Amino acid sequence: MRYLLLLLLSLPLTAQRTSFTPGGQWLDTDGNHIDAHGGNIIYVDSLETYYWYGEHYAQPRGAACYSSQDLYNWTFEGVVIEKGDIEVFERPKVIYDQANDRYVMWFHYDGDRYSIAELGVAVSDSPTGPFELVDHYRPNGHESRDIGLYFEPDTRRAYIGYAADHVNRTVRMVELSEDYLSVTENDVDIEAHCEGPGILKRNGTFYLLTSQCSGWTPNPATYYTATDSVMGPYTERGHPFVGDAGNNSFNSQPCFIFKIPGYRNAYLYMGDRWNGRGRTESEYVWLPITITEDGEMELHWLAEWDLSLFTPARGR
Ligand code: GAL
Image (cartoon, rainbow, N blue to C red; front, side, top):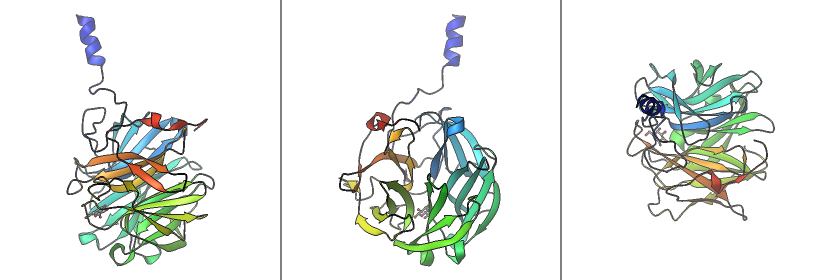
């Protein structure tokens, strides 16, 4: 009897997850709804761990970090930076700086009615924080609201796509410095519209996925392609959500595209199902992104799916 009790006590509080259920209730390993919205995922080779960062709406508000070994089961690592006096703290994106073994977080820093429109940057020696605020400003003088991040593994350079001037009339792309701690002057208007930018590269072509501007209400996303450079020029290609009956990107807004290591061309669409506004209970829509033989981007609805959909690759 005593052994049975010990066994029961040692069992995890929630059942191990083995699949993704877009739009479902996603619980962390403590049994709480995952509270990490509008963020991104990194994989740190040396730690063999995925880290998921996002907006944390429960107190203390700021950015949360969750860790996982398999992308399905996530452990809450805490709030890695508190928003404190910052009125609006949205869309955190973290890059691992391998050369300096530290973690850099960029985010949307804003104030009353989104009128400050700046980028914020913070740094930490550990993936689980604490992150210290380094600076906040308008990149090269441009308004900056929703942000996306692209990390180029070949050159180890990173780029931020940001919803920019005249209240997100356009998306601009800016290259970060070598240490990822500041923006360079390589900053162009890529004439895309207008929020939630996610970026991937496939066979030398860059794909940019963006939502329209309708606040927390979902809308049909658009994708763009550019050859050779993440800085563009980009061509508009249309709405990639196939069979999207609600014409609202399966009721989600993009926040990031994560290239899953260990698989061939495995691109994970990360979208937020805000359900009216950003809050703890807002949900997640994660789906595989397909680039067809003709180079078109497609997303298909899957109520439940797992990584066996992808072809394993050798090495990570
Ligand atoms: C959305 C944006 C969110 C948040 C919201 C506020 O368009 O993507 O990140 O800023 O507006 O209304």
